[in-house]
Picture (cartoon, rainbow, N blue to C red):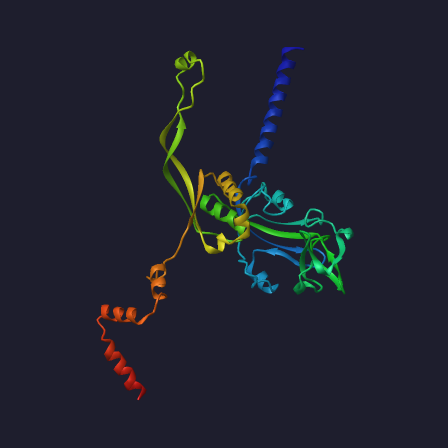
Length: 326
């Protein structure tokens, strides 16, 4: 091979490398998995146009679901975390703020294909008496379903998802990429718990026990390995503070999975720790001591002593009451 041929091959290789680099750069443009975005969307079943989900309060009003206790507004999600259907996430990856789109999700990827074998006859005794009617959502042997028919002591329970077998059409708009970490955390809590608690991020100085590096010469002389030593250092930790309301502390998802939720927040938002603060409001001066004192022994001696302490003449009060009765 001549020098000219070698030079041509090298030039061609360089051109290929540049093309690959350009394609890689293009693929990395736009939103990527792990990014937080604020989106609005509305989803209907394709065949029956039954509302599946929406962030639009006007749509919720039109469909008669606005009073179900849910707040209808744009949502903050993390791409690639399964917060919405995977097909919708795939459509958003690579897009920019302000982009819109429509995605049709097959039944298999939405709520599953309809399985006739998932409809079973069970004893009505397994169902709460108040729920023994067609259409009631019930739980039987740990499985969620709904009653299709009930006759006598037997009920036909459909354990398919109510939207199983339906394709879903999803219309979405990417409002913006969310870079504020407090908003990111609030969005995650809303996804987990259906509520946004009061939260904020601060950098704290914290005492921490750290291991002391052993002296190599002393370690070599010792026949037995020395026990590890620790010293206290002041380190900075980014802390997400969270105010726990009674509504949150009674939330079943929080009670069952607070450790996992906290760890997920730490991983995705990038803080060092989460501190949950429980606030107990005052009772306007009526503490437990005052309440117990007010509900204690109400004998005449105690009342007279209390009136004397308050500089009130008990005899005058009695005379006034008797005069009022006359």
